[in-house]
Figure 1 (cartoon, rainbow, N blue to C red):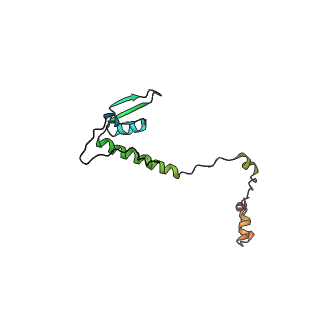
Figure 2: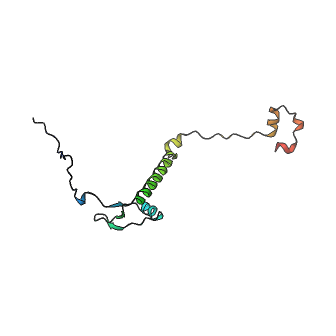
Figure 3: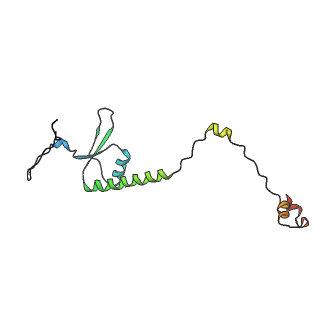
Length: 134
């Protein structure tokens, strides 16, 4: 068996190669309408809108500028913060009907009357008025 090396192009020191233009998209693109609204609130307008052939989804294209990327940093930081908050929220568990049927019925605890409370505190029954017992 021969030792095959992966397809590697060696570039000699000082040699420069021209990359094809289609290798890089010259505009920033997003399909998120929320992102489009956020960028518009920061004063950054899209350059043009393109619809995909397959599904007709709107793709908003922006000129790549430092202001755009600064706004994107803020937008995605905000999304990450929202994600962390949502992860901390406790979602109530769905009640299982079988478990609900097996649960023991709640026992009602009667409130103590003032006479019973007075008896526990060793207050003479004569000191408790009739109004206090109701």
